[in-house]
Amino acid sequence: MNSSTTNPSPGDAVQSAWEAAYQRFETPEAEIRKFVVRLRELGADSWSRDAQVVEIFCGRGNGLHALAQLGFTRLEGVDYSPALLARYTGPAVCTVADCRALPFPDASRDILVVQGGLHHLLELPSDLNRSLDEVVRVLRPGGRFMVVEPWLTPFLRLVHGIAFFPPTRAVWGKLDALATMIEHERTTYEQWLGQPSVVLESLKSRFQVERCSMSWGKLRFVGRKAGA
Image 1 (spheres, one colour):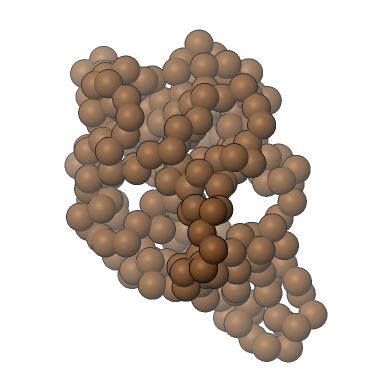
Image 2: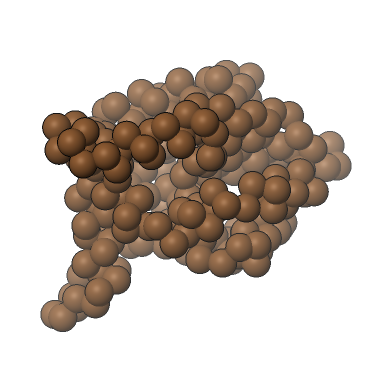
């Protein structure tokens, strides 16, 4: 996103509307607390605090703040949006880059994390496979990849039904914000939710599975690169 553009494109307007809804959905403090709980549930307390950790699709960096709160000190973030990265103030080194071409040498990082970014990819399975191949390339042998993404469980179907029910949406700001975000990312969101077998095959074919669960509207996956 180029802040110097005088005539914003339709894509800029969509991104701005999505961002406004995202800020209504959850405060940074609440999101950081959520990420801390999530990381612990997925085993982060057992990970070496000296590990070189990269969060891709890191956005404004709340996941990086959560990792720092857990004691990780060698942190990096990657996101496609310079405007989002500009909002991060913290110890991590952040880089504007495409997840399909990560700016790191082969076998140079210990842990890669993505929380809610893969479902924004434009084309499945091609963009997903390119992104995961990059994760494999960058991870050291035995390195971990953690993924948390939306998943079409019965709970998420229920949330969708409530969120798009006009009377509920009118009185429940958090659900209205969620519905607005979905409306502005509907193409990639529905593409992701509609191909669960493709997503799981892409993950499981590249990583040794440590954890994999689908509940409460989320896929939670931790896998390791072979070789350690």
